[in-house]
Image (cartoon, protein in one colour):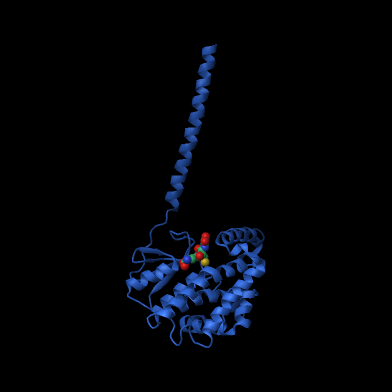
Length: 288
Ligand SMILES: N[C@@H](CCC(=O)N[C@@H](CS)C(=O)NCC(=O)O)C(=O)O
């Protein structure tokens, strides 16, 4: 009897292992099959053409990502052939945008510009003095690492329900809180998220005021000729000018510091002539 009992125990134990091994095999097989099925085929892109990987522009004329607007403006200023590849695939640094150029991959807009400048022997800041270059770097970094976060916190967290991105429909009620929470976490880690809404808007205003004062009545940031710094600053300003409808950022550009609005329209006319003068989104264009 005892023998029988230990035999059945043994079978039960074995079964246990069998079930575990079987489940493991099915899981591994399933994951492998999924990976094989979803594996992206490496596309072949045209030679000597930059492929800009970034999120789909959707209904918007210009990207909702200021770093993509910066890069596209730079490609246009430097006359570099490029194509857009709308994708949700992130770079090796888990950010967008990123590029491919003749089979090489580069992440981060600043490194992308450095890479292309070196590859193509370009220097769009050539006409700037050393001091102007230093000022240009300081403005670019302020806009990208500080002002950018005021825009993100306002547009995607504090005032996200005012923006209510079009196209979400009924999904908005559950998508927006999830998105806002995600942005809050990012903002908290970066630091801007630790400030109140009023404080964020105050920082935003101080930064934009600084750019407005520096720009003054000049055509571009350093005079008559646009440079790399204009691409970075315009990339960020484009968001305030066209992608913050009804928010304080829009008021700052359109009403409080109108030389920034004029600058945005000047940049748009010079480098994005196909967009016309007033268009913000394809939706709006249709309705006007
Ligand atoms: N320093 C990067 C910044 C790029 C960046 O912050 N991209 C944002 C979209 S505007 C992003 O990918 N965010 C996703 C995330 O951080 O998870 C650059 O210049 O390209």
